[in-house]
Amino acid sequence: SKTSHNPRAQHQPRTCGTVHHPRPCSRAVGRLPLPSVHDPPRVLLINLPHHERVQRRWVASYYAPNFLIPPTELMGLASLLRDRAGAEIALVDAIAEELDVAAVTSRYRAFEPDLIVSLSGFRILNEDLAALGAIRDAMPGAASVIFGYLPGQAPEIVARHPGVDHVLIGEPEEPLLELLQALVDEREPAGIP
Image (tube, rainbow, N blue to C red):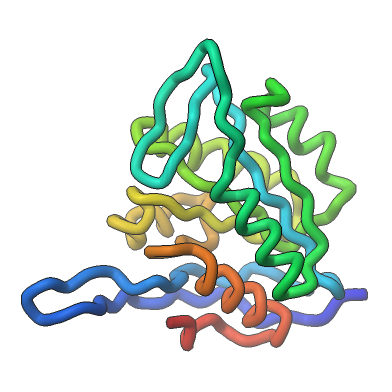
């Protein structure tokens, strides 16, 4: 079943730390486009497609033609969302499976995700934003969430991309749990730490 949801909202960033050493807080910024959320909520976590065998990590992305490293950040979030939020999870490594955007959307459209979550690459941020937007646009009712070093450093800029609904700043675990709960509770994520 589904529950209704609030309209889109924008949120201003804040900083944590000391006066001499400000740093971004772990939190989410974005807008709420979801008309409803499944019960339990459905989350699709994607290691986004790319034309090369790119490895995405928090502060780096690199090409590795001879080996692949699993998307451990996404795997950890999948376990957390399943175990602590009771979410129904689909996890796809489009790099390992050599899937393009069309193949990802074809395979996972029937899942009807409420959230689509991805870690951005470093030098390929624009390509990742475009891929995330294309996947989100092919899955009506889903909101997109991106995290990583660059989105956390420039959340206002990344959040303006038409394919991005939410940007997680800092460590993604707690903000993503809070964002999902806000969607389930039909409230804006303004109070997310």
